[in-house]
Image 1 (cartoon, rainbow over the protein chains, first blue to last red):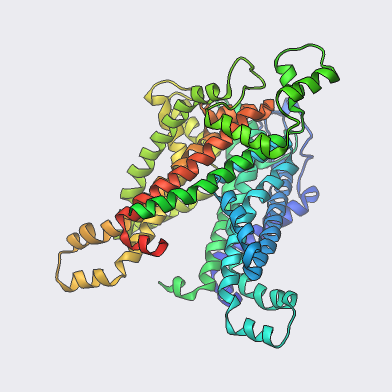
Image 2 (image 1 turned 120 degrees about the vertical axis):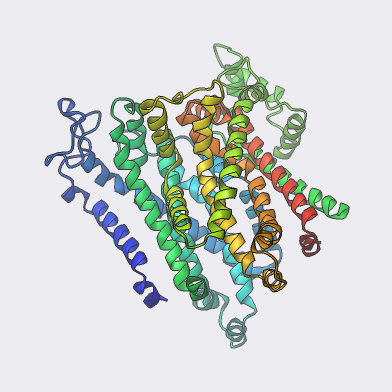
Length: 274
Length: 313
C-alpha cells in the first residue's frame, strides 16, 4: 500500500506540503522575521516588502510572522482533537464490537443520540456550557466526533470477529487484549487513517470557524481564523488583508482532503483504476 | 407500509427522549445556581441565603433529578421553556419565535440554491464524464469543500457589495439581502451533492438494467432520462431532504458574518451573555428538527422504494 502511495505524485505533494507547514510551525521563532505581537502603528497596512514579506496588518504587525506563528494553534489543536477523538472512538468501538450484548447496546444507543445532533450545534452547546476557552473547543470537538469513529470501528470489528484468523487466535488461547491489539487493530488501521486524514481538514475548519466567531483562540494570539476575524473589520478599506489567512486555510484543508482521497485510492486499487 | 411507518415512529420516540434528556443534563451542568439566577432575574437587590433556600423550594430544585426532568419535559411539551436570563421580560419561546422566520427564510433560499445548482451540474458532469466541464466542476467542488464558509461569505461580500455595489452588505431587508447569505450557506452543500449525484449516476450506469436497455436498442436519451436519472435521483432527493436541519444549523456562522437577525445570531449572542435557557432551547429545537426530518424522509424514501422496506422490517 505504501509503495502504491509513493508512486502517487499528488499524495506525495500533499504530504510534502503538510510537512513543510508543520516544520514551519515548529521552527516559527527561527523563520519569522518579527515577533507576532510586535506592533508599530506607524507601519500599518504596509505593502509586502523585504522587511515585511506579506505586509502588515491594522496594528502594524508583520502578517508573515503571524501566519507562521499561527500554524502552531491551528495544526496542534487539530492534531489534539483527532488524537482525542480516535482514542475514545477506538476504545468504545472495540468494546462495543467485541463485547457485544448489553455493553454494545448501551454504547450504540449513546452513539445514536450523539449522531442525531448536527455537529456544529453540539460544539456550540458544549462551548456555551463550559465557557469560552480554546480548551473547551477541543473537548467539544472530541465530544461530538468520537461517536462517528465508535460506529465505524464497531462495524469493522463485528465484520472481522468471525473471520478465520480471529477465531484461530481465540482457539489457541490468546488473551482478548492481545487479539484486539495484534489482530484487530491492524485490520482497522488503514480505514482509520483515511478517515483521520479527511477529518483533519474538518477539525482545522471547525477550530478556525470558532476562532473567527470569537469562541476559540482569543484575539492577540495569532491564529488564522482569528486573523480573518480581524481582517473582517477593515474589509471595506483593506480587503487584501483577508487573502493570506484565507488562502492558507484553504490550501491546508485541501491538502488533507486530497491526502485522504489518495490514501483511500491506494488502499482500494479497484476504485483507483475505474 | 402502515406497519413500517408505525415502526419508524416508535423508533423515533426513544431518540427524542434521549435528546431532551441530554438538553436537561446540559442545563443542570451550568456552573451557576439556578435559584440565585432566578432571584437576579426578579431583580431582588440583596440575595440572602434564606431567599435562595426559599426559591429553591419554590422552584422544586431540591427534588430528585428524575422528578425535575419529568416536570421540565412536561413544561417543554406545553411550550414553556422558561425565560431569558439577560432579558427577563421575554420568554425563551418568544425569542426563538421572533428570530426563527429569518433563519427559515435563509435556509429555504439556500435549499433552492442547492437544488437548482447541484442537480443540473451533477447530472451534466456525470453525463459528460471526463470532459473539460466535468474536470472544471470537480476542481471547483474540491476547492469549495476546503474553503471556510465564513471566508467565502467575506469574499462574496467584498466582491458584490463593496467592489461592484450590486447587493447590500448585510442585514435583513428584501430579497436582495437574502441572496448572498443563502448562497454562502448553500455552497458547501452544493459541492457535496454535486459529488453525490455524479457518483450515484455513474454507479447506476454500470448496472445491468442499463446494459439491458442498451441491448433493447433504446435511444441513449431515453435510457438516461427515464432509467438512470429516475433511479439515481431518488436517493439524492432524500439526502437533500435530510440535510434541511443541517442547513438550518449551518446558518449560524453565516448569520454572524452577514448580521442576519436569525436564531444563529441569537445563539452566539446568548453564548457570550451566558443566557443558558436560550442556548438550551436552540439545541433542543435543532435536535428535534434533525430527528423529525430524518424520519419523514426515511418514510418518503421507503414509500418510493419498496426494496428498503423489506430490509428494514
